[in-house]
Length: 283
Image (cartoon, rainbow, N blue to C red; front, top):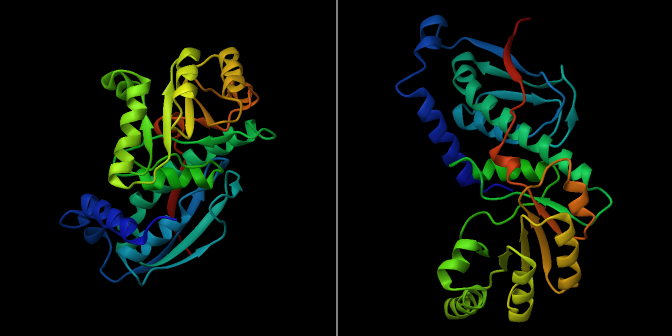
């Protein structure tokens, strides 16, 4: 669930960015106080996501706007589906149109891709997870879309999990030093955070196991063969995440290796937005 204050602040900033000193086109063409209706038309098969955000956008922009929704976040819908009708002050509807569509199109694209990946690994224990490869300022929405699509969230940012990656290891002087310093830091700060560390080879996996002090090992760009070997080495002592080079063609094979998580950065940084429109409804 997205914190309401964060969402409201995001919406206000987005509206201000778009409206500036005023929506002069609507003010010029449509008399003040004119009321009407518009409907959301979904033009592609997809997993819909962002409807609750759209509801909030309308509420923040103009609390007098009313909406009727016919579908719910997470529904699999077909081209031609009507998502909702919004009615009230036309200036308000037109001011929110682009923001609502941008959010719905992007979130639905992420949710649809996530659902595809989730279905591809059905029957295995692997969970599909996102990364920090998100659009600046839109992370809360994009990670919410992953969850709507059936995936799980990795850390939200740099503050809610320890993620020891290759640069941390290299700058620290090796795996052992990176883990040792991390344990000392967490103890000194009184922090209770999960610790994940990246392994770039089977040798790295062996060093991590010998060193201990972590919760999850990320197998970065491992082949299927080496992933199988790593899973046997780890033998259930730590959570295992596969990452790097994951595609729809090979994701099932990685899942069948016995990993717990498969992180797919493309879910949020290689997005195909879903085609939709918000059109006037004439009665």
